[in-house]
Image 1 (cartoon, rainbow, N blue to C red):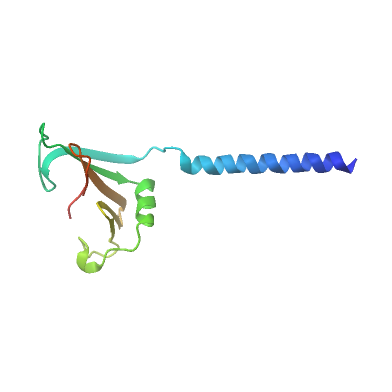
Image 2 (cartoon, helix red, strand yellow):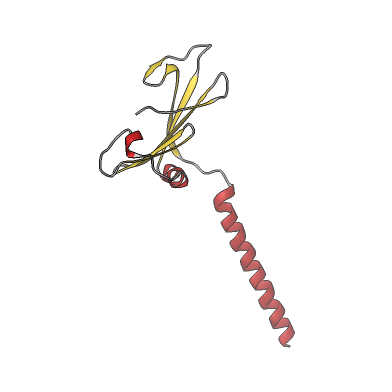
Length: 126
């Protein structure tokens, strides 16, 4: 009599762990929506021109939870001398051509690509 009860409890525990694992896995391996915007241009950032057939670049700007997750993944903060702002509560982090900022307004990250070569480029200027 005890054996069926143990079996039922074991199967229940396995089912619970399986569902828990599936829910946990679903949190990280599926694509998620995010808040962002983009600009397709030619020339250089800060002096953008309309895109041409030979020069097309894209700059992405993302904010909200995705930008926070990116910022948190990119530590440490940039040194004060390398930062675009010295305002209190303004923090910057850079990795390659990805830049993220945390300030009193929230989190924002920028990155870009040269659409003709596929090369990663910076997505923002100071």
